[in-house]
Length: 105
Image 1 (cartoon, rainbow, N blue to C red):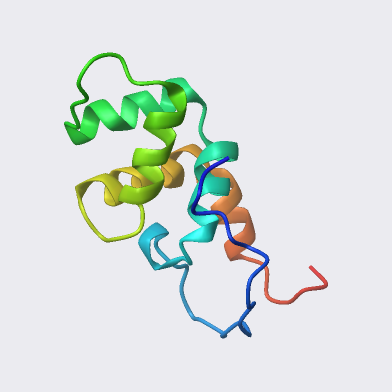
Image 2: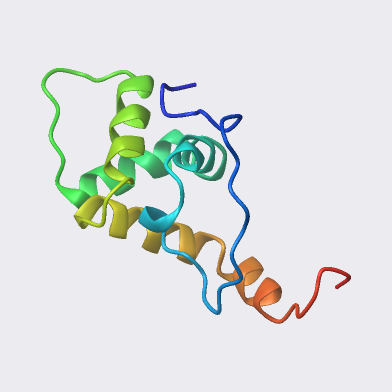
């Protein structure tokens, strides 16, 4: 959907981490997919209002999505708000998956 999605380029080996990554710690090409599939436009607009972002005129859904994908790249007010919203929305699944100890589970 947006220019940031370059998932097919040079995959790097995964590292074993003891914690979940924050949204801004993920590779940028994941941001488009995460925001596009995990948030409705209503939810995305809510996060944008919480962040205090202002647009001139009435922005398209694509403009809102693209702006937030770019905001998710670096730790800041917008990326923290997105991460917090996603954590609240998917709390049940995060808790369930945090108990998994290996790939077979």
